[in-house]
Length: 261
Image 1 (cartoon, rainbow, N blue to C red):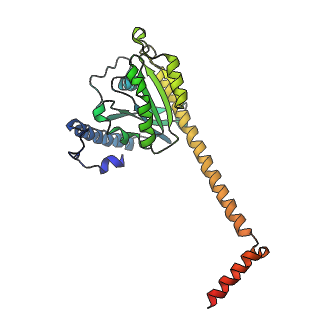
Image 2: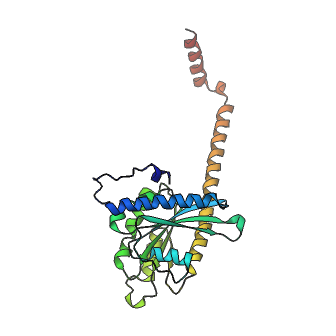
Image 3: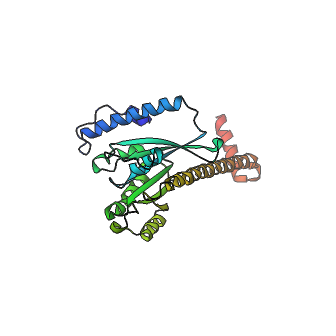
């Protein structure tokens, strides 16, 4: 968010891949962030928060998945996403263990690809969505994974691969087996979604929140272990008897002698 505030209000003309719609999108995102901060300031936020970025080609159904979960199965997005938007979900079994997932819905159109890396920064998790009736969207998953690796700033982001529109059986071009194989290759969890399974996305968010907390716990344990090893090393160095090592003793004597001159 701080990056967006510091960005100039005008994009240089040299940015050929970002047109006037990109500038408009950036302003809309600023307004959305401001509204979000005001909402957070007037509510009791859960103890845990996590950033989730939703990636995928245009038309795969990213916005539909997110907003149908928020507003109900009858929600129908009218226009393609410009820039990005976000929705917050509080997920968890009890109030004390709630995780506020800030889910960023990014634009999949090529003209807005230059803006997407901003939203990937410091993401705790990524949902990469493809359309099972569109082979190209499946092939582009590798591009989204590469972009995430370059821009997220972390190697511990939890990745979920989601094949959408499985209810369109007659138009299917990507099999479930192919999806599972790709998920295993990129070290991601795999799901398939359809309009007939409106509650499945809630299960994905629930599992994702658990994975985020587990990743943070492991990171904390690794940090504590590293600090403990460092303290032990310092303690061992301080307890070393240099007098038993004639070479070190000679160097110390020489150093004292020279310091007196």
